[in-house]
Amino acid sequence: MNKKKPDIKEIKKKLTDEQYNICFLKGTEPPFSGKYTDLFDKGIYKCGVCDTPLFYSHSKFHSDSGWPSFDRPVDKKNIKYENDNSIGVKIIEVTCATCGAHLGHVFDDGPTKTTKRYCINSLALEFVKEK
Ligand SMILES: [Zn+2]
Image (cartoon, rainbow, N blue to C red; front, side):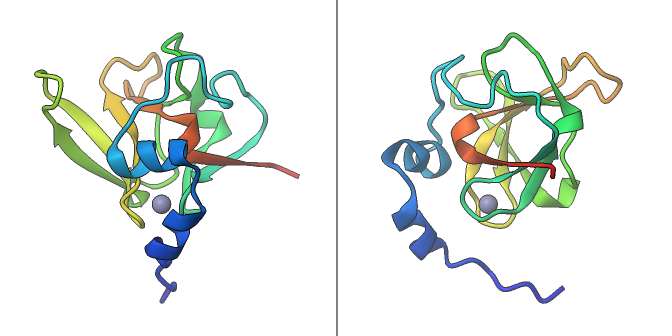
């Protein structure tokens, strides 16, 4: 427990402009541009900003949306859910519970039994391959 809180100010300095735009200005990477969209290696996807584990590769599926898609997080506590009305329809924004980075959105039209589709920007994630 008693995990040291990451120094977000320091971390922000290390991000690329693109990462900063997505994670802290709530941008969205162009569909099919992300490096993890079609990656199906075994491993874990962590927050690209603070390393909090967010999604396992086995919960990833191919959605044709152009963004990496997952049917559940590693732990619901690692994710924060907020209503997003910015496009005129109510959708749910997902952010990293540890550092507040914007990750993407979650929709209720997933193909698996969780019925969830976490639509996440590759740039907000850091994939760590299983050894
Ligand atoms: Zn984070």
